[in-house]
Image 1 (cartoon, rainbow, N blue to C red):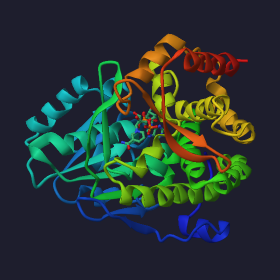
Image 2: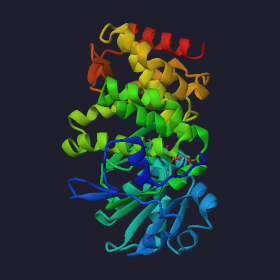
Image 3: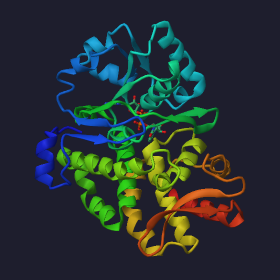
Image 4: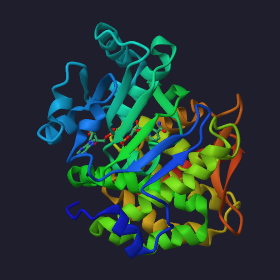
Length: 374
Ligand SMILES: NC(=O)c1ccc[n+]([C@@H]2O[C@H](COP(=O)([O-])OP(=O)(O)OC[C@H]3O[C@@H](n4cnc5c(N)ncnc54)[C@H](O)[C@@H]3O)[C@@H](O)[C@H]2O)c1
């Protein structure tokens, strides 16, 4: 990613939905703000306000040390390698110990600078240490800027089971500087775009088709990408404000995720999260059409863009037994049924559907996976 355009100009030039450079999300903790702040990397001193303890992604430290000098060198800075293994309860313990050694107090603030992994660890620490601490977030990946930064969730792995532990605890403030996207690897851009595709599919056929038509420009025009980051957050906002604790309508944001988490687990995290979610959406569409709950034309309509977004990983082997074992461990299941999210009916609306993990379902999974690599 090379170009960098001012977000305010971006919105006017693309005609995307008008949201201000700061908007507010309502939560059980009260309102919190998302700032589109493309001066943060120029002057990050505001992150030193209060009594901060920083948790910073090791790659961000490496790439941005000169610009984040006083933060990276801060006595209360903890550097985290962003791996799924480090997002486990076992690896969270040394981080919590460091914070205690650094004499963290209730009037101090945790500041996460990184992607979804650093976010999940920081949010979890903020929920559990001293029975609750305030935290702030500087998302540095596309996935975190366009999706995970809002919605309050922390998700921590336990053994082989992904995201089985967690809390709901929003940050006090989120600072989005798209300058961070300049250094992302291509796979991490596709990963973030996977989540942007997901929310647009949830918003309806027209929103998905608009995004599909703009797909190439997401990689070449920063203004267009910024407009879709904002649009994705605005779509998500409507759901999380109605159902922050994920007991009802917010469930549909798991579209692509039950399959996606199982794909991540079955491939030992060889596939980045948002790309596994993109394969998961294609798999959900394929299985829904095979089961007769989705007209086949919707699978055919969505497949080309989903495929382009996961193409780099289409040949990664996915063992079916491991996939099915991971699917049955999903925290949303009942004791006998898989609780999956599918597009359903003529308008491809995203709905929760309970499915028996029987022979027919297994055969549908096998067919999808065998066609994936072809
Ligand atoms: N809590 C939530 O609501 C939520 C939602 C979606 C996903 N998640 C979780 O988020 C994780 C995925 O997050 P992610 O995609 O942000 O990945 P990540 O945090 O693993 O980061 C991906 C890679 O990008 C690197 N990186 C970070 N910022 C960079 C930058 N500016 N330039 C170059 N490299 C940079 C990281 O070091 C890492 O190698 C998964 O564990 C997923 O389960 C959480």
